[in-house]
Image (tube, rainbow, N blue to C red):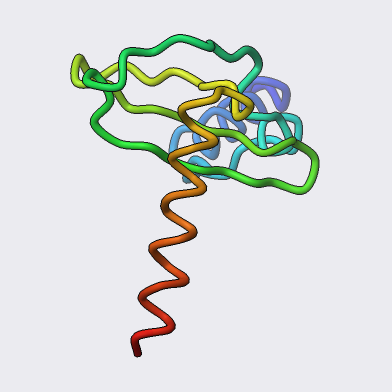
Length: 98
């Protein structure tokens, strides 16, 4: 048997049985989740809010909608600022009562 053919067969055998890595490349890990944001999202359509703060990205707010889509909301939006202010006040009040 030819040595080159044997080498190719060995590489193919190793490649087929080698476990795949679940790690993401660094370029994907360091990317910001929100590349663009929206200012208007009907609040009644929002099911869940996620707040992300990563070292290389600004504060990000991701809304999961009732239709299972996810959109990034501009953190400067007036209703969102009021929501965060109310949430912080609730947290302060609950700490004072405990």
